[in-house]
Amino acid sequence: MSVGITLGNGWRTSVTRSDLYCGLIVVGFANGISERISNAIDRDGVVVALFNSFDVSVVMWAAGLVALSLLSRSERQPARGTDFAIAGVASAAFLMPIPSLSWLAFTGIAVYLAYSPISPPRMRRAAAVLGAMTIPMLWARILLATVSEYLLAADAKLVSWIVGTESNGNSIPFADGTGVLFLEPACSSLTNLSLVLLCGVVLVKAYDCAWSKRTAATILMACCAAIAINVIRISFIGVLPRYYDLIHGQVGATLAGWAIILTVSLIYFARIRPNEQNHT
Image (cartoon, rainbow, N blue to C red):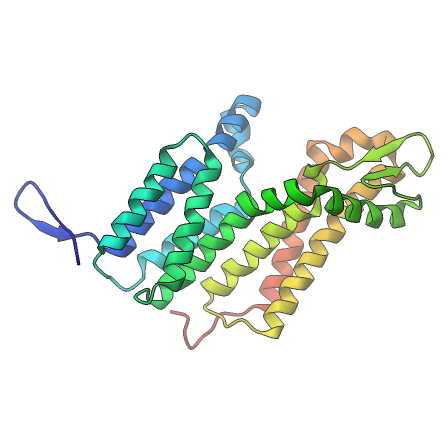
């Protein structure tokens, strides 16, 4: 079943699956990050918010572009009734002023495109990227809200080994005994890990690489590097509490963020190569 649209001059054109899902990605992504954009502009102003990519990781922006590129270059297929039904449900979610519903809708779209028997290879690769995008924006947040106590306790234990004090749950005494550092959900390494995983999926699917032990080991290395940088940053606070505002504030967060991006990028680009046979 294909659906045609008749234009004003009598021209008739078919809506392709690629065009339909590209449109859904653009609208859904915009709604999914709308709250972050609004908060960033209200807090920092347009110029600073733009410089900080509206508090949305550059990895997320890159993933969205890769998904759109893969879909737009996918085999042209006429949209079917099922596609329009999915588009209708997703559009209803996008219209709701609840950004998390957009990422939930993205999850459904990704699952359908990945497992639909008519989806061509590039569309399946786009579905994998789309699904991975929902991890940092939805599922990692749900996981953190559910088991944050254990995740923060694990981070605190790693920090305590460096600081040289004994952690208790999510708290670590300062090295000089002047106070205690409490880890909050925003300090969890899980947020960085979800972005590192997304970055790995984006490269693997953009390069059309097969999943292998080498790929898995590379992603594991990148995750360990991200954890190490986050733990070292927090440990500096425990060792040098008088510089808390500097290390914990915007300067420290920006430096740590860029350190993670550069380190992870070096690991991935050094070990993941385009599939010359399939990558076109």
